[in-house]
Length: 71
Image (cartoon, rainbow, N blue to C red; front, top):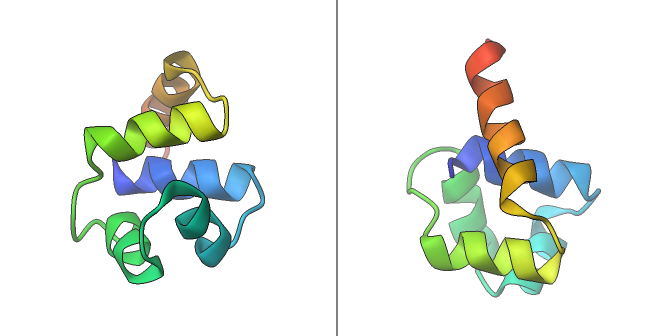
C-alpha cells in the first residue's frame, strides 16, 4: 500500500484528514506524511483501514493498480 492509495481511500470515503486519522488511530501529521510519500504506511494501518471501513484487499489492489495506469 502506498500513500497515494491511503489518500484515494480517504477521499473515496469523503473523510477529512482529521476524521480519517481519528478513525484509524494515527495523528493528522503522520497521515499527511503518509499521503505525501514521506513515510510508508504500515501493515497495521492497512489492516485498520480494511477493518474499520470494511474495505477488502481486492478493492485496495484495484486502487493500487489504477495509480500505475494513471500519471
